[in-house]
Image (cartoon, rainbow, N blue to C red; front, top):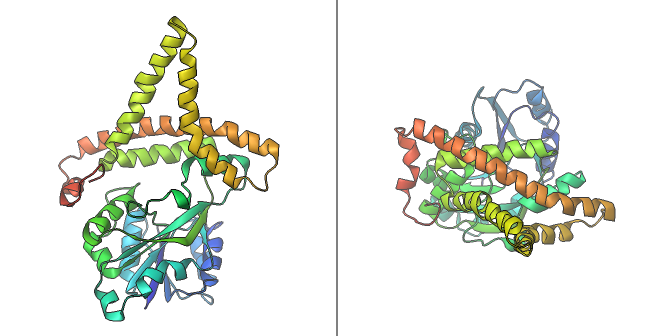
Length: 341
């Protein structure tokens, strides 16, 4: 089985070494590593070429290309019958590729070449600060929370046959964020559920500040609006913050302070899962850092929600201004229903 690992980069000089070191240490080495640079100006390409003696590299530049276009170009410049995708800002467990390929390796060679299959790997936070610890616990699920038949993998840890890529139509180049979700939906529709490889883990550092996290989630929600994703989730969020929360505050102030108990209970329920994750991840941190991380969880949740509520209508404005573009009707191509279909 010939396997190509693909990746896009843009000004990743400081981080690219971690990824390339981890690729060079794989128990199942990739047959080629295909990297597309979107036009780095910080010496990223020179840093990559420094690994030419350790990895079978193919490096090309597509100045100005977004992530989707970069990934599509990388796939088309690859030669593997199976493509594994990752990101520049991660490092990979030594058995990442081996585990990611296990569901495909069991197939006979001829069947594998003709099959429409994809495999979902996993990802974990690699925090360096108390804030990053809290952010990872707040925003990232743990492996035992995943429902494999519904899991939509990040393209920092995923593998697919070339047939599956062609059947999906590739990554949507009109979308700057949430592009891997549209790819996932199309793969689900054409090929069925992703095989689940929870031990194929990519580690990445969460955003280091509240401001950078806000910008990230604003862009994610703007991508949701552009692609018309998760209407119900966004509607519930608006209803909670614009109707339910003000109503509870008003009842507390005008009628009886006991209503504040309902407000506190709602906040506790909203933060329960991040707190449970944090307790499983805070080994090695002292109690002052643990307490600080606990206090940061509601702040992070509220910040992320505000970012989403601002980003989603921005995406919809773009969608309405571009409503005649045929690619916006992507969901009409899908056979599956549901919230995302």
